[in-house]
Image 1 (cartoon, rainbow, N blue to C red):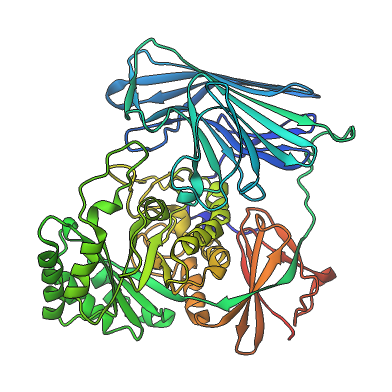
Image 2: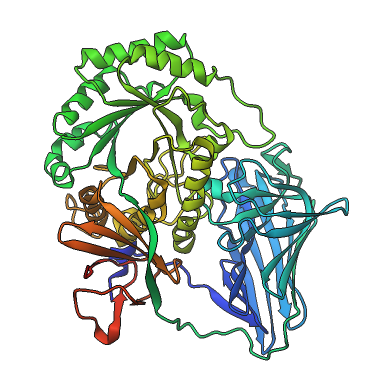
Length: 623
């Protein structure tokens, strides 16, 4: 059994959810909320949660007291009180009741009250619908005025709310089974969380067009209720929800899609440039195709950064790109030319520039006023003038959300780029790995907007480098699993290696020009620090993944379809000595793999291959 510290980079274990069943309905009770809501083994909702957000959209982790769980043969009930401690001694208490019974709906009720008054950006229910098998399918939405609309879940990612003023939403779970989810106590609307790489459509309380943060008045109760009613018109069966955790082996088959693996980049900041120079040997061992240098005058970066970048570039045999957060406080030509002059004075000539107004790194949510920003056409024109002869790219230095909401003019650009981050809204292990489901929707949406324009992603790491939705990223001194945290212990363990290899498997058919998935040094890097699973100064497990991907760059890949991509991801690469099957276990459980018609050059016990939790393995295949 693999050491959990080596897997997660922390000795802190996640609390295991409690499985509750009622007839064919099954739910996981986790930290007071419901996850993995299934009916007859099929996912109905990804989650029903009662969440409280602070002014930076950070999520409170309430203290749960007075918890009581009552199980019967065909029903269950849960009661508890959740308490949030806010700034300046403010508090909020939420009394919760959850119940379900055979032939009766699942009901989740919450009464919140504050003795002091309580500031929040959001306080109430979030309901998550899954995306795989749901995107693009029919759905019925009932609005608060009683009107009903027959429509579809978005297929391509919707930048703004697809549904507003919601009271009820009904979709087909499987032939003969429908799920009706009713939300009471406030006005709800839906956002397409695939924008942030969350694998869900989120229906949430309090429209974003209303002011935030807002204050819950002292002594004023906030009452809400969610009712999930499942209708099953199939022939009657008697089997209850299964509690058997055993699953059949994951079967694989060769697919039809093919392409070339992207170049692999590494991000270098001025703050880490000297450390990168010291780590020249690991850099040479990886051999990345691209170094992506970050330059932000608003963070105090000046011409000395380019001197350090030039020194790093001398150690690198591949190409270089500089991403520039342009302040846009002076004439654009002046700002761009000053940066170009500083580069030349330092003897640093990159192969490409990604330029974006600094202000565009901050999100503009629905209902908010867009900040002052010059036209992007003018920004790109200034860049072409200042950096003549250098490829000019654009897009967003933040996430796909911002690119989807502010679509950059592509004609002046040699390529488009954006980042992703898996811990914007949730940071538990399951949610992080589930973000992989959203990546193909992101890349397909980008292709729908920008066609065959060269396309880059990154830097994309588990820890968050910048928070477009608040004033800061979250500090994480205790090494927990925290949304929007600027450090994450799993980056230091086998978890990150599996996530990174599975990330690549999820974006293969996007035809990426370059993919950047780490720094070399620092908390986003590949060299271990103090109190990590490997000794300080040694290579984190992620090092192996990035080195492997750099070695595979430019090789042909072939699709490998998995019968359960939520458990095992796979792809085939044309290696020097024949096809190589890459397997990634994206779960905390041992997985068995049936290679089917894929012929391994190595003998397999009982015809099956076994992967330990979050293991990455390569298997040579016969031609």
